[in-house]
Amino acid sequence: MIQTENIFRNRSGEVIIFLNYIISLENGNSTEPISSEVKILRGLFFVHLYSLIESVINELTQETLREIKSKSYPNNQFNLPFNTISLNSQIRSLKDSGYKKYFKKVFELFDSISSSNVFDIDETMFGTFVQNIWFATIEEIFLCFGLSTSILTISHRVLINEIVDNRNSISHGRKPTIEIGEKYTAAELKTKYDNVLLFLETIISKFKTFIEQEEYIKAS
Image (cartoon, rainbow, N blue to C red; front, side, top):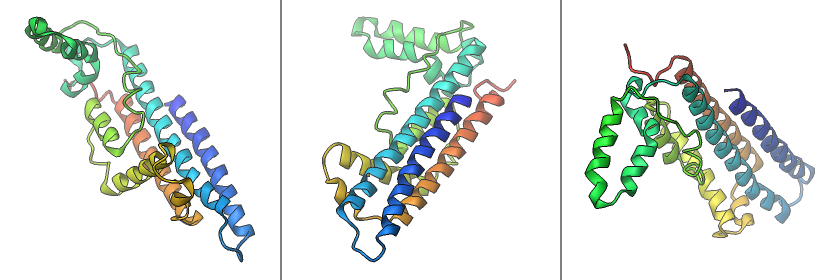
């Protein structure tokens, strides 16, 4: 997971630099009311933090699929859930087929599950899916890979969805940036940053084990 870990390190570094700047502004004016500029920066913090999450998850899925694709396994060796990935092109073909070709496409899809052919895996297939990524998006990605979602907790759900909602409110103009930022202190933002890092580290570790132990392959 070299590329993913590099993105994680670089993007998290950018976020903490931004946060430290906010903290320095607060500490430098400890006796004064919090300025509008600081409140706006606090709001923009969620845009940076969201970018970290999306970029890491996007690269993680791509790097994982590149590694699996390089093994050139026949499809009948994959665990059943992974067919949502390995047979993605057939699933899309079924979705787009007209009524006259529907049953033929259904047969081809089910026949491909037990096929000894090596099908092309599109490493970018989650690219659009992870744009505007919510906690439920991450859960669905886990299910497609056949991973247990037990490590994804309710506290993770609350954290990620809060970040995404704040980011979207700013990016889509639903709320002024200052309105978002005035609800948080820099200390609270630091806690969210630390929790996001722990969350992403847990997911990266889970996918590393998934690759190293080839958990996408049927047990022999």
